[in-house]
Amino acid sequence: MAVTKTKFILDFEKPLHELEMQLQNLRKLSEEQKLDVRGEIRAIEEKLEAAKANIHKHLTPWQKVLLARHSHRPYALDYIDAIFENFQELHGDRLYRDDQAIVGGPAFLDGKPVMVIGQQKGRNTKENLRRNFGCPNPEGYRKALRLMRLAEKFHLPVISLVDTPGAYPGIGAEERHVAEAIAVNLREMSILETPTIAAVIGEGGSGGALGIAVSDVVLILENAYYSVISPEGCAAILWKDRAHAPKAAEALQMTADKLFEAGVVDGIVPEPLGGAHLDPAVAAKNLKAALIENLTRLSALPPKTLLEERYQKYRKLGVLQESQQAVVAKIAAAG
Image (cartoon, rainbow, N blue to C red; front, side, top):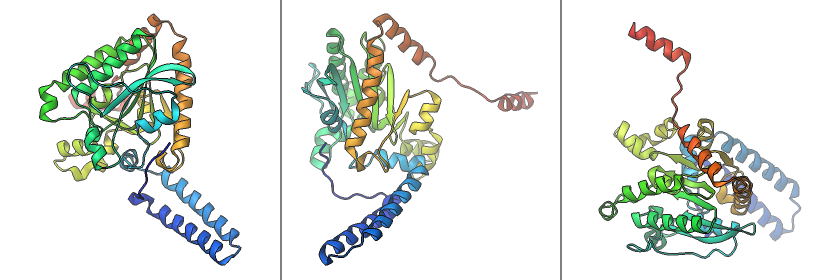
């Protein structure tokens, strides 16, 4: 999996970067001066691993959001290249144009044919403009729906790779009815007579993510997030200041562990220590294993059972549970 890298370091990664530089300098010195410093190298390696484990054990929700947005993080096409075989990209919604913020087409997963759809960001300014920074227009969602219906016709499972800040909110997108395009996808995905899996690989922003994620199984990578609104957007609404984004990220309960506890996602895919960007091959291997495991189970279900289980899954979401203390407090206040 080729990911072009120019060193980008988040604030909480700086102590790790300093240790990595010490390690690199020591190895260079060993080679140049022919010195035996294996003991010192081993000590720094152990210190680096311990520091990495400690930092990532105590990441805040906001820090996980930053990891989900990391510019070196693998994107949809990186995972498609690493996980699937013989991917053939299909273009266009047959109505307006081809939206390159969404890619998709038939491929093989572990020798079995599937339809894979993903939201794609760019690595540089030129590519981001072409991909619209991973924010799909309505024709992107209509292209995705076209591929889903094609998959249903040929009995292919649908695998969606979710990674978007949200659907594009521009005037053109509104004129071409982006909300309607997403709404149609929600309805049609709920009744597709073929197994469906969605995996949130980075950002899962609002309806833009949901437009390809109404699936039998929803997976999320360990450092990805899935939320009704971005932390910045939430902060701007509640506190009138985007600087409160870290507070909003915590309140939104948008991280993988919180989403799993709430039943919003069905499984968490582990990432290599430090994040998927540090070892994309391991991240892809873990995601592939999770996809194969769930697809094997779903493929054994008849369409009627599949649809019923999908219906029950989404009927159960959003149930409000109040603690006994909260109920007692409300009764006391009312009385």
